Image 1 (tube, helix red, strand yellow):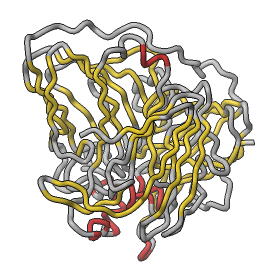
Image 2 (cartoon, rainbow, N blue to C red; image 1 turned 180 degrees about the horizontal axis):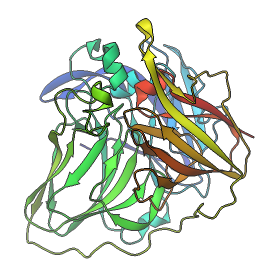
Image 3 (cartoon, rainbow, N blue to C red; image 1 turned 45 degrees about the horizontal axis):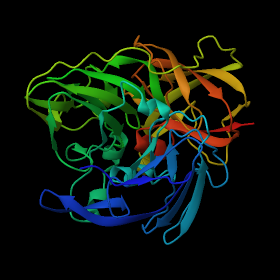
Image 4 (cartoon, helix red, strand yellow; image 1 turned 180 degrees about the vertical axis):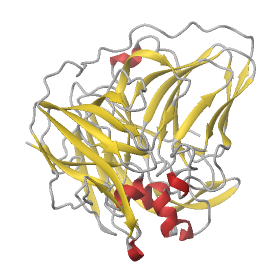
Length: 446
């Protein structure tokens, strides 16, 4: 169930990704999907700080596409992480990403980002993991663990391109498919000897679905968030991954027993069944689904607790603040045949308009307010941020982020360090239909 892994050699990883519809394995048969190199998820790209990643993307779809390296701190210009590039059907484009020598290790990912087609392409299977390794991966408690990649998705299942068809209401409420998968596999199982420490790199690659995760029968700890290693391990109980978020966890398999990693249908609006009655998976509110099963074998044992420092985080809590900004997510009324409007600060996305001008080598404090009756995950390209506080009084993670959930009717305050790279990029809601329908802005850093 593990995706193919492509490794850099001599400081370079050069790959070709073909975006195309394909038939992929499904319960002894096949299903229709949009894929990279005929598979979903696509190959895992594994590089190191200082490497050069060169990706030639060949478009064999019927619609435009492009590529976003989600979470990588690389240039947004020219042939790097430039989401304003459009690759038409039958065309190809070569991207070249120079990974900074001090780039943190972590779990990142790639997916399409051509405005207007993002939700359809990601929901149908176009996603893959990027891993950056460094010396932290060779030290305790990470050393000598069994690593697994887990890409969570919820595609619509069918044998033709009809799986791409969604009603207007379905797109407004967010796409929820026909059950949750791990690496495109329904409810896989792992047989693991007791005494094993498992390391799971978990990616939420769904277009809309949140994953509240629960693991019964084994202790587990979160080591990393979106932007890499946390300062210290934290108990992973209560871990929720919004669309686009990642987490690395350690799982101690201590007993010869069967354990399940489960999720529940997310209530994006407390007490309202999701989006004020117009969202969430229909008739599934609160339902528990098994993502995967772990079968422990052999003699019982007790694993040592995972504790101690993991990383040194350059905290922005006491940084000089060069400016403050306010952003408000809003949803408008039904706009005739075009559905509902989704805006930030009252404006829908315009690729020709710059919404934010920021200065390189400054730190800004942003407050993201959610004026809607549903949760929205906020994502910023290129420049990672730190969460300072939130209206729901959550404990901020001790590390860097690039996606953060903004609760319905609430707010999140974060600080962004504009370092290393200038250029034009975007920020947006990572419920991808909302992004496609305008909940996105352009930032230019100079």
